[in-house]
Length: 126
Length: 126
DNA sequence: CCCTCCACCTAGAATGTCAAGGTGTCTCCG
DNA sequence: CGGAGACACCTTGACATTCTAGGTGGAGGG
Image (spheres, rainbow over the protein chains, first blue to last red):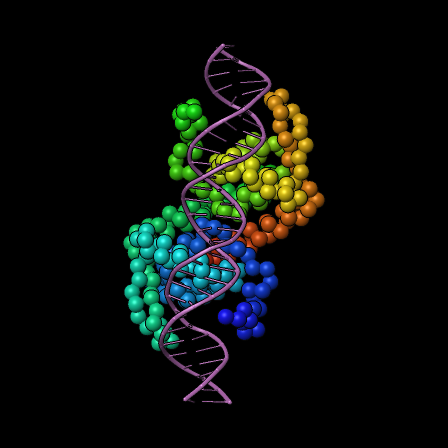
């Protein structure tokens, strides 16, 4: 299958795409599902949109992640037609997924805070 | 070699150690070296201290990372005695390492900002 | 002299992401 | 009606990074 994609698709992804930090995808997905069930394609677009096109999730990352989350019991899904009348799986948070989301986002906060402390030594004076 | 370590060593690392986000270690090392040359052991302690014991770098992660950074020309080292009169390698930033640090920390900022936007939908109302 | 801490290192497993490819269906447009 | 393109699902294999679990040798204290 040809590599060439429609020209306007390339616009934002083009300029040096930033790889996702390994370990953050689960958090992003859980958080995105917090507002209600979504299918895979919609999750990607949500994340892209809300991150202002900084976070671009590949399908090859997304689906393994979704299946991982299912295996761990943090999300479930049910089939149903999409807004465009296509077959789709709507993924939704389970109760334990909500707990996990809290844990993960706590971890993220601590982590990001710690890195921020290291990155900003300038203002260390009281 | 026995697994048992001195009891007080376990205190902070014990309670659910958080894995480093993959890809952040280079940034942390570069930033830590920004203030001057340090040897490996000191880098670990710097990071631990300044992160308030949130970020704990394993030696098995540190040394591969240091060698990686050397290969890429971002740091160099010279041998010399440590404060404790032991053989040590003092790693220091190169010019291109400084540039890389700027790049990496820019990437981090964008990334962390994007994730923060996703994590905080609550205050989306103007 | 033995033990511990320091300071260096490596090999192998585990993990997660990405690049690249593949299926089928729906809709629009010529 | 036929093709193009978006939508929505998926998998495989390569890759990079971190962690676990070891290993060396020397300094200093008891």
